[in-house]
Length: 148
Image (spheres, rainbow, N blue to C red):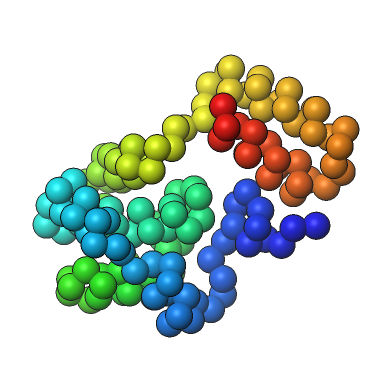
């Protein structure tokens, strides 16, 4: 059976070492340029944090669940004042725009709607004949849906 880090919904480890932060959450120069072009002022840090977390987890999580050390590392890497959390004062409007911008940058399409659900059920039924653990079914399902 696959470990939680290798499943469809990996999680942040309990302890992020400085090496993990450096390796996984340090923005590349191109990413900083993209964020500076896509957002202004205090919106740059939340956008970069969304990008780096999505690259690591492969899905968006609630901003309250983002580890403070990740936010702190990203803000320091961007030369911004230290922060331990990201906020979206205008409710969810900017958050959803940031999600859409990250998807567009990474070439990720949301998988929603009745057709998507029917396709996922069909693939899951076929996969269940081959593997018998839920985690393996989910991982194969995601791989198949991503290929479509």
